[in-house]
Image (cartoon, rainbow, N blue to C red):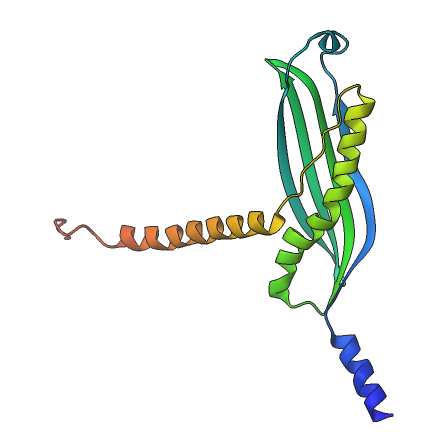
Length: 174
């Protein structure tokens, strides 16, 4: 009986991560130069922008959003612009504080990316264009890169005030 209680206590304290809900927070499709753009031919230039964010909702519940913006241009003319904010509600119970940011920046977008990919592909086809298929994205590499940039910026801020406080060697103080 004591072993069962101990096992139940350990299970309650074990870190847990789960998906509560996946949903589209925002969706936009624009074909500003239709119908004339369908008469032009050529290889479009496709630009893809990513952004992800996470917001605590309380009691170990977080809202994570992956926003993907795809713009296709033919010369100076925009073929289409599609943007989807794919979101999810995630439960993180007994997760150490230092592990929450990586979960929101890596694990959550990895879960949301296939849904965003499908939404963008379907939208471009329904708009009359070839599907845009997002390739797998290494959110861990993006997170580590941003973390290094943030640490370098913090180190520069710490170093800058210290050097400003020390007067140059040839300055005379009165």
